[in-house]
Amino acid sequence: MSAPTDAIRKTIVVRCSMSTAFRIWTEQIDLWWPKGHSRSGDPRTTVLLEQYVGGRLYERTPNGVEYVWGVVLVWEPPQRFAYHWHLGSGPAQPTRVDVSFTALDSAQTRVEVLHRGLELIGERWWQSSPRFDAAWEHVLPAYLAVCAIAIGAD
Image (cartoon, rainbow, N blue to C red; front, side, top):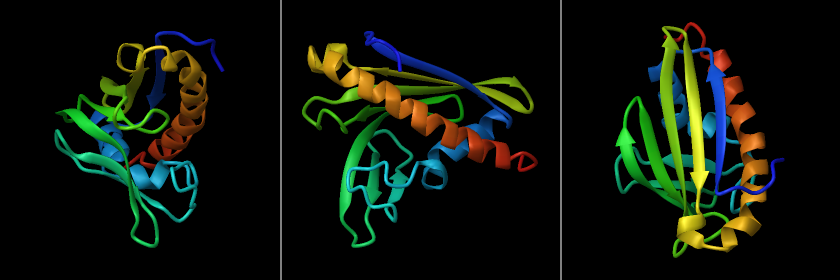
C-alpha cells in the first residue's frame, strides 16, 4: 500500500486486444469483480455497468436490492471511460475514476486507472485514499486474470 497522494495511479498490461480489455472491464465486470467486495458484502451479488454517460455502476443482491456505486461521466469505447465513485464517500461527495486503454500491439493493452478525489471530497481524501489504493491492489489482479483467460477470444 502506498502513502496517500492526491491521486492513485495504477497501470497494468493485459494480454488481449484493446477492444477485448474494454469489453471485459465494462460488459463483463461481474466476471472479475471480487465477490463480496461490495456494499452489501454478499458474495452472490451481481455487478453491473450501464454503458452510457449517466449510466450507473451498481450491484444487485440476490433479493433484488440495488446499491449504486457510481455514475458514468465519460464513455469513449474502447479507449476510455470515467465515473464518479460513491463507495467510501457517498453520492454527495464522490471520487472520480478514469480508466484508459491503450493498444501496445494487437494482443496487449495497457490499462491505466486514475482515481482521484481531493478536489471533490477535500480533506476526506487523505483518510480514504489508502483504503482505495488497497482496494485497487485487490481488484486489478482479478481483472488481469479474466483478461488472461480471454486470450484467443479476439
